[in-house]
Image (cartoon, rainbow, N blue to C red; front, side, top):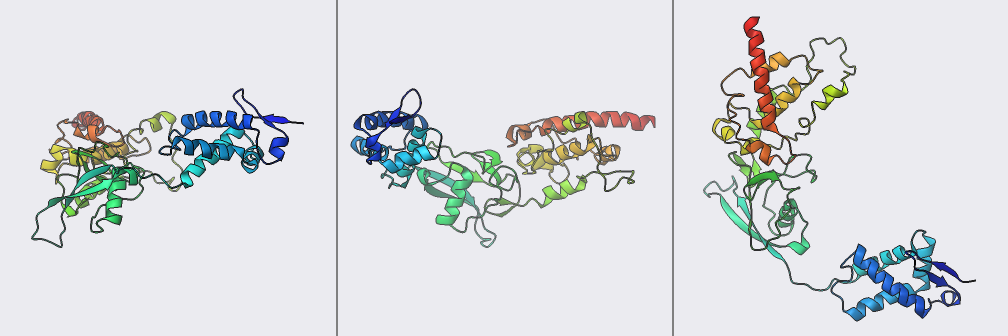
Length: 343
């Protein structure tokens, strides 16, 4: 007894013609039409670049085999979808047609301490975007692996989590791993290290001062009563919600190195990233040293060099608002000074 399979209101009959090794011509024709529509909808250019006759022939061959049809049925689900997957796999395995390259130029900042007599320079590399990943970090890795092994930069997670690959791309501080390559082939992508920082080599900035400032704010939980040390400190949902938009900071230094006040007073002004982290601990309900943390900022430079330029908020790759956090600290400082005056 013939049986039928398929979906979307269309069916394929399984009868003696399948048992004999092929589908009926009628079902093959119907399947080819359905498969073509499904491929266009799901995979678009799976067979792009092939002549029309070649595409039709390959589709008909896939549908016409008993093995392909049986495998589609045996794995369950939509038989048509399984055939489409087989067709897509076959297209991927086939040699890709030759296409013209999409050449993109990258101008990269270069300087090495090994060549002290040389001034920093911009070196241009040309990549085929069809053979490169979509992010700027993909381009840098390809340049280092295939074109110039001396190119130096930091990288780690490739997911916008660690902050290692922070750099200045086309005039904006951001993460190379989350910054998409501008596909306009007429524009050169310019890549520099984070601005106004000493450079170790090429795209690697010296963050020693940045981390020293971060260490100075004591970025950890401090308790005056240590009787519960080693036990969990509970926190209400409302208090925990106050930390949203603060704890996500990955210390990439994009915000601090975009701040003109930090450029001018980087030795004394703590900068947006460190101040936002300071605020994160000040408002943590589990911390007992809020007043001491505020007292630490009682000087003309640590906090008050912020002039609300707001470059920090505009450039943050995590979408945080360091400028708002600094404003909240200033409000807390006013209250703290009033309490200190009446004490």
